[in-house]
Length: 268
Length: 320
Image 1 (cartoon, each protein chain N blue to C red):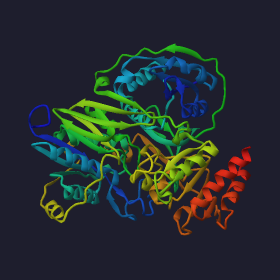
Image 2: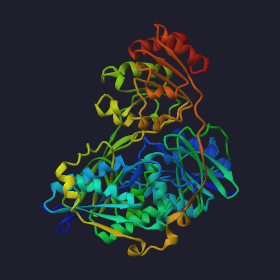
Image 3: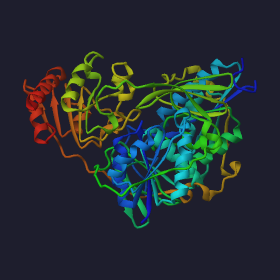
Image 4: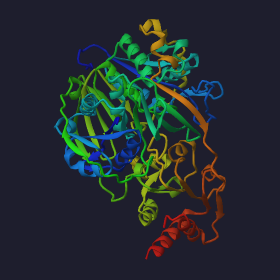
């Protein structure tokens, strides 16, 4: 049974981001944007969960298509390649020199235009990127696209034109429901992401990757980039290294000695 | 004096601590106007005024409980239009960040999330953030529109500053978008009686070294001796020893308490990202090479099953 309301195939767009590896030595370039040259990049781990849920929803549908979408420099194709090798059907890369330094508001504009141009019933995002880690792009996309936001889901399913999911908050766990089209974001609790198989990696090389620039999306250069950004970073300073602490080996009194340290610091 | 909107995070009228911290920061920027929405909104007024709210705008409607996020965005936008504030401050919880983002987009303004401090600068509020696993501190300001800034818990000391404080009903008409995502069920989290993780002054965490779900009892006992919240590393959460809601780290909660005690946690970068801004850091770990020891003010190389119960016992003894 087709899963969307129109009976047509279900078009899923999954947004992915190419980020500097968190285990690398991340720092800022002279213009206070993230220095991408000195650290290896990879598909943001939190977006792998989004790709996984997109693939599972597509597998449950009779007829569905998963498009991976990214905005970023040439290297960002790596993130698309990973999504394709996991099983996405096709990919869109939005690349433009004028995008350098784009903030979350600008990124949401580019993504929203690209999603609209691609056509969609469901947008699936990770809960946040692992570099900026703001966690606001899914909400911004829903606002821009004028569709329901069904965000921070630890469980998600799509049936008969509706998306349902569970959102675990501090105070309560909520069951959510919205009609398609909708924007979904998923957490790292939504389900382990699959590893690309050898077959998947080989197949990915033959899958179509479209490249769009700002003119394809009717976006002016001054709407994005550092110039278009709604925020300005004035400084980024190395946090002072923590003073070297006291490390003791437990010879039987470790707990009591630690209690004395805590008492000195007035925690007890 | 410029007014500063503060979005109130409360549970049935009980104001959560980070909101009171926001009132301290808001007073640096202008005159705080608090916006409290949903069931119990009017009950929040006394404590908000006690902490410096010059005005409290309240509104309740079933939409806040029945639909996700957007009704609150509509209300905050109504407050924004009524007040024309110099800045909008929102607690940096998951929902707070979503509300702030949508509001910023609607009012054509920039958004800064997870600020750890906010000061007044020459061109408006300047927010400090701790980024890349706390290896950098950045200063950022909003360059277009009214700054919308979300602030992390424990970013300011709560100060009582009784204000004249008037309470007014906010007039809100909901947008079509407000009813887009229905909340069809809600299960309240069982209260453990412990403080909430993100806002606790002391956090006691356990990791892979704790070894089992049952063994978390010794972590909880230490936490209870200190009146602390319990955290867990991703390794411990992924194997089901402790709930995800207690996960500290990049994909869990980011905490910056006065004291963080890591037990049986190696200190992978993803965990460090979530706790590195803690004021005092203590670790207990068998492995002297564990990266967590690079961060500590005090570390014990030893078996947590010896050290932690002894520590708990000693704390309880000192309290008597």
